[in-house]
Image (cartoon, rainbow over the protein chains, first blue to last red):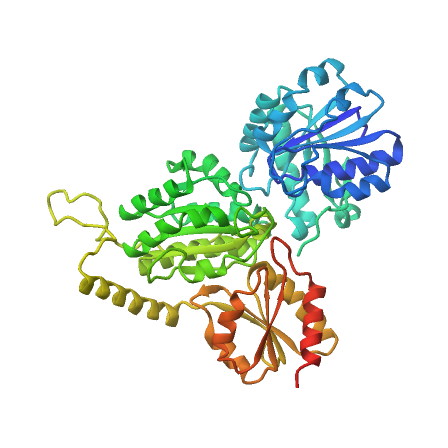
Length: 220
Length: 353
């Protein structure tokens, strides 16, 4: 993918934003300096970009996140260095926004600055196997709610349709029709399809662009 | 093969409740079960149901009492401190013989505790939770699929026996995401001639009440309730056995602890130690029979728990203290890892007879 300075990941909660954010940051860190991940999740105290802080440190990726993230203090709060995202133009930032419209409210604080700089992608992460977004119409309903909450229109879609560990290549292929339908009805391109690493080789000739991901959480 | 969808444990409970015909949900937010309320808030208005965020847990459980009295399938959910607040209501539901479903996605305690997973409400759940002589049917899921299945089962059992079913999960079960099939056969709710649905001037008033001022009568109510409990103990006990048949060391674990224990059993078997696992699915009624049977051939039991050791008492009672029962545990929101459980198996295996 050709990255803009800011890559903003939004979507229904559990759609896979955090896994994608972490993997995008890893990819970016191989290509450029001054890469940051902004963990702006104010909804979920578990499973967030902050959980990968050790890997970020190893790869020289800066983490912008609240001091209370992953501390078990169940407190919705924003990072002290929030404005680095918009002020420091040397940074390339992947923004991991909390789920649904409630999570996207946090992004609204930055929306005017982001839009006036105009060097961003605002990407909707979708998964057709999630219960509240099984078809194009329900997915677009969630998109509109998020846009309404943060004030930034989407510029593209990431198809991350998966059934976690059980995902097969056929599952991903069967989701392309759904992704295309979301694309047609919203008028936005499918900017990327994301799969777990083990499916990448099976699918790379059939889906483009495709990203293979190292999953952040291991099953118990 | 994609009849499955990817769900969080908490979502699976909410969707399964809707499939089971529940159209009334009352709750008050608390981590780590808030997704149940969030899901209900999104879905109930679309299907003509009622989602109501109550002013407190106490209000929510009494709203459950009201809907249950009217004969409808109804639920509330909370996490440990919130369930304590519901204790009075749970006792009133029992005293009024009302069917309902209560979900406890446990977190570390006591007190306000923390937001990480725990199983330390075992005593509270299996011994009743509120005051008086009563039980709840307590179901302990160990996967997201079971979160859904046991929710449906919980409604059915509640209606059959006119009592409260509790889903006793933990923070891990609530938060983890797994593929789920929601293809259930749901038994429709039975006739409820006792429900307060309006007499239409055609019958006597139905009275739903837990107040009983004549002790001779109140005693009879208690006797009748315990006769029913006996039938439940005989007919509704559920458990899973894993490699127990020839096991020297038998683990007892439910929920997330059972998943960890299963891995440890596999590792132990690779090392030549005959380990096995009994996973209670109903915590009340507790599956006594498999423990009694295992005690005839095993060397010892190990109860693996996310608590200071609560189920261990039931394991001792069920095995009639024929074998030593050891504890392998973490508490306060920590989870034992397979290595800790394996070390415990090795130690008990070497140190016994």
